[in-house]
Image (cartoon, rainbow, N blue to C red; front, side, top):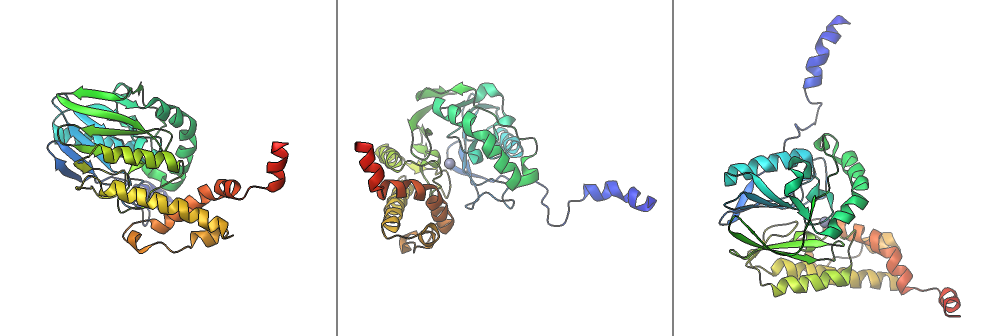
Length: 317
Ligand SMILES: [Zn+2]
């Protein structure tokens, strides 16, 4: 008995079998002068990746480091802050939050509120949805989330040009992946950070998607002629526009295919097993995201495509 008690503190300090030490090993990729990307895992949020699935941008300026997104948890935000300071030799002076999703904004607690900013609509969406996201993240990620609290970006951002430490950053308000999607372009390098409007070799996530707005946003991004595009998920696109076009192609195929499946009378399980075209064979998480998209879109597209004649007649009487 006493022996067991004496061992208890030691046993508690040793992670249980299979447990990770909950440390994010962030590996920056330099993509331009004073610009780095920390790549996310091209997989769904899971214990194995601690929710670190989104790409994060670090931009060095004479005034301090600028971050594009903050990662999925306080532990991640802390690691990101250390990395940004190490790379740039300066403190973080700006954190842009691209949109409401927790893999992009839940690391915000690591930074002073005064440096955090997002589009006003994103701030509203975070206030509305983050308690629910937080519950889901804690359940999925356990100890990775320790200490993480829901934080709302403090400064509503007016899109335009921000000059920080001599660096000219263009901020652009678009939408379609969510109700408000912030994009940032570094004018010196032509690097575009489009958040989750752009995925690359990783199937797009669509829980809040509006297909027509998303397509219009992608057209606007092509019009910017970026030199390098850092997608929200997937590898950096050094052609500038291939990832934007791939995202547009997937969304068009997805909307058409869901519509066809509904008109052919398939149920949601059958539709989720539909063949995925060969040109998307290299896309990570394609089947997973297709099935998620069907679960989001099927009921409302079914209601739109298969109207009840009695309901529509009575509505016009
Ligand atoms: Zn997202």
